[in-house]
Amino acid sequence: MNALTLPDIAAQASRQALPLDWVGMCGIALPVLFDGQRLSAKADAGVSLDDGEARGIHMSRLYLALEMLEQENLSPALLRRVLLSFLETHEGLSHNAYLKIHTELLLKRPALVSPLAGWKTYPVSIEASLKNAMFHVELKIDVPYSSTCPCSAALSRQLIQQQFVDDFANQPLQHADVLAWLGSTKGIVATPHSQRSNAQLQLRLDDYLDDLPLIAAINDAEAALGTAVQTAVKRADEQAFALANGQNLMFCEDAARRLNLALRRSPGINAFKVRVVHAESLHAHDAVAESRWNWEAA
Ligand SMILES: Nc1nc2c(ncn2[C@@H]2O[C@H](COP(=O)(O)OP(=O)(O)OP(=O)(O)O)[C@@H](O)[C@H]2O)c(=O)[nH]1
Image: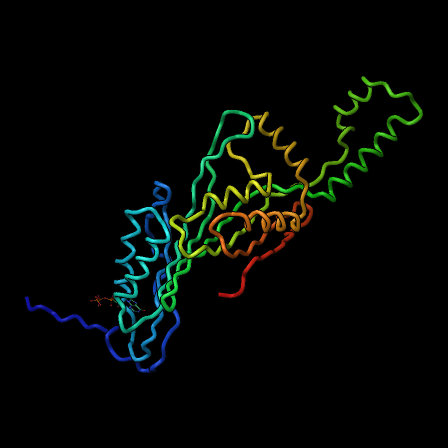
């Protein structure tokens, strides 16, 4: 059989000589390693096409460079090497390289009281770029938590006081009667509303970090928020969770402020934007607050 010369359309001249900002592939399936765990990920890989005369980039070269991610723990140095390879294989065509990896971190979390533990997933995106020889990494992390409305708690307390006035009006207080009343449904005639909430963290990292501070940022955010959602739960854990929520009333504004203060102290982060979303049970819409630090558009 005659050897065929395969047509190479990408190597042709472009009909419209025009550079492009980003060209590549989105949603590439690949396994990545983080902290010794193999995670299923989706990658977006691209370069700028600065040579406006060139018809196209070489998609397969970007795809093949992603193989580096299979064997080595994700780190800033590894991301940089992949981006360098994007540029080396597009010499004369591209000046900027981009890589976005979306995955879910799986962390084992202990129960509040019982000796149990269970797994929790945290959606994570790692966005790396090499633009005009400047390397940047940005992390996006979703952290779920529980929030109880402080206003609803105050309104409930008022109703409980009113019920107490009604039930104990004009009679001497007996310790046993009050104790029994407190243990009855009348003692908690109204309950404040709570909601499953989500903190969306967008973090710009210091340029010379050895590791991606994903776990540290999650731990710092959960510590600041105080009431992370739980995994394995026995009644003792649920009671401890109820107490933690009662001691941790917060509006979305409170949550955003706490995260701002905590992330400023978190190592390796030089700018951030946070958005907290309280999926209200009071309404069918959400309460949302945003806060940023050192953040201007990249
Ligand atoms: N540039 C570009 N390539 C595309 C697109 N859609 C599919 N491809 C295909 O991606 C495949 C890989 O492209 P290249 O990396 O240039 O493949 P190649 O020429 O065999 O590889 P090299 O010899 O390394 O250049 C080709 O078969 C392209 O046709 C597109 O929209 N743009």
